[in-house]
Figure (cartoon, rainbow, N blue to C red):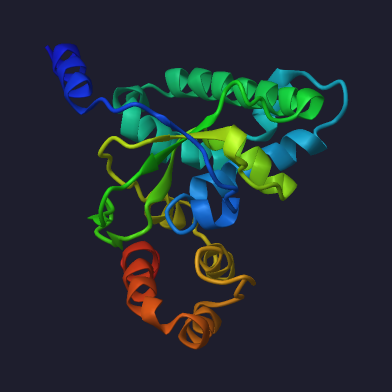
Length: 240
């Protein structure tokens, strides 16, 4: 019955996907809601630094306490497969498989670069909406599918070019993974402010106070947005 409902819903909301038309800054695309892309990039850093000739089993064991494991448990599993969280062995097996796929994605990117035959999917909002953390969202484009490949572009300093993405205009929710990961990871203010500044400034801020001052000077009309984000992602979740 649930599958039938999803099929009917997809048929009712279907819209033709559109080709990308502009080069996009990845930092501005992922900030402020998708800190999970940063976490995936951090895993790829670990993949790049792994000992040559080591087994995938050894690598999985080495990243058991990595922020990627927190993302996998608190975002991936809790959102899509919450029943798995009751079985530690099943979680461990699923994490090993997820890490192995990430390693394969990294190695493919290293050998061939970005595969434009598998474009990243962006979602486009027709009008302002509210994120699942309660923040009013005015920006139109947001990440849909392809977070690992976007993380590869992010860590390489590349832009998301038109040939690398498509746009899905169907109505969608804006998920705030940053609001989940900030407390789950015990994110430092310095790291949170630097990430948040990607969506506001051309340079990274080292603290929330510095970010506020910079936004006040460069785009004061967005101070309300910044205040709402910090309340939803940081003050209400991380601060005691």
